[in-house]
Length: 466
Image 1 (cartoon, rainbow, N blue to C red):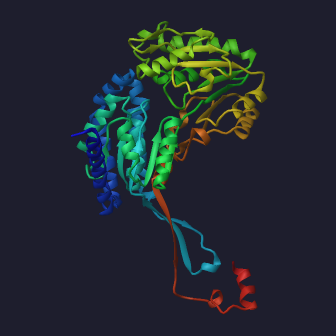
Image 2: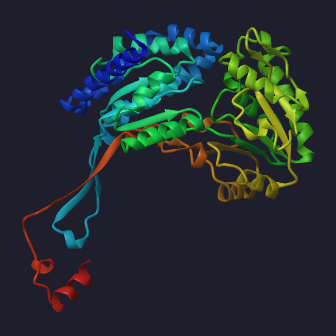
Image 3: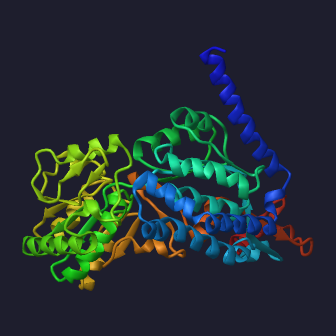
């Protein structure tokens, strides 16, 4: 068989497998609430029964310790399932709205209905929960789901491909492994929604492909998330929370603080507090810490090393190519046009940028693309109010790292270059639902004002009613 024939066969195979899901949706199986709750319960069983295997895969891919694997992936996903299952009955009910007098007697409401067969393309940095969190929302809304885990986190990808068919309905859920070729084949197919988590460049590819089928998309893209430290911030607490949120997963987090803006008066004390917190968390040599992760692959390791060229390294900078270890690294005032300040870092490097005051900090943020997250550490209500009112970001956290992620009532999503759409909690259910508009009128009191022939009197009365 020649290469062209093999490619056609592979395309047909993926298309045929996706068609099974479409047929399942068409027969109405996924609309039943009991079925949806049952699938959520089966997914919960998968996680509970396979915790060791999941943790081992995450360690193999990213060097994640068991605690980090639990808090950021396993436990996070379990909590999401439990919250969704608890509220599913309420979310799926008709949502009543008022009916104007001109449409009386009658009632108006929105009826959530599933979209159909959806595609979830996960990311490599949190390769378990960034696939399953959207899937939880899609299941709750009554959809069939095709999952495409990241090939860069190969151990987690293969684990999902093996376990999902064992626990979930094989005619409603499908895992497709592979890289660019398989993703391209998937994107050539019509879906009812696509949720992609990853970088801006691939996000544009996904959006272009979706446009061919007029498919709605949710894009979670990241960006350079700023961290503003006010002069009155509690530096010990601030430093601990910045270190926790920056160096979790070795900095490979889409909502990690990408750089810190601080005044000259606070800069040195903050750097000292960060250094102290890093040593408390990871010891004098983080390479020996069981709690510190590794870079995903050689390409990203080389990319991160390149960011250190011609920079003033205030702390860290040590690298070991063989184990893909990069020490927690702090850069002192890198130039605004340097690569480390132009591109999303997505690694364990934290630039500290000196700014004169809050005005300059706000201007700095606003001169750049809108970030996925923004952090401000301050005891001043006036400072916080200004940042909230004068900047734009997908998510904001005041006096902490990405703790907004643990609140299922808060939607998660970007704005501008950092993404579009949102999910988590009811927002995720709504993302994967169509809120069908319904008006139900009575046959009684059919006043003929709106029917021809018209008259000046009819027009006068209509103007009062409408």
